[in-house]
Length: 160
Image (cartoon, rainbow, N blue to C red; front, side):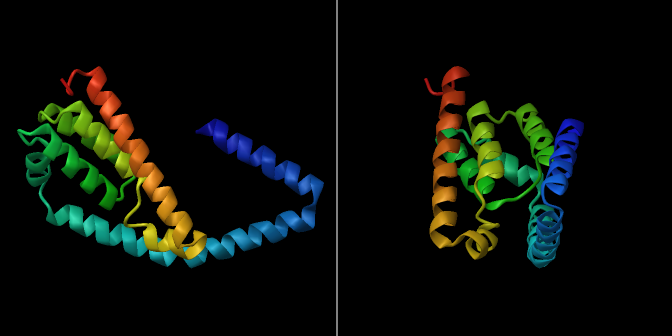
């Protein structure tokens, strides 16, 4: 992570040296946009946090560790697409679910859709990128997540 911060600092310094006025204008614009997005983002995070608090983890495990792996796969894809959470929470959660017997293919579908598909963030994406771009990004992300999960299931012998 420190490398990314270093690279960003160097890029900002290069931008300042190339054109100081444009860089300051870009930073002001970015700051203003950030504060316009912030209320929507905070509300989404609060609502999803409340939802995750109200739904016990036993319920999630029960749906994902279904006896029919395809139903678990379907629920994992659905839950992952709807829910929003950062990776530092999602990946340990997947580790816990793995210990409770959830299949790798199901975990792959859950983690990938969680990180890539944004039903909860769709209104924000729609506002900034347009409906068509937001739909295309979500549809292609869902397709890729399903393919990755199926490949994961194949390599772990869960599709046989």
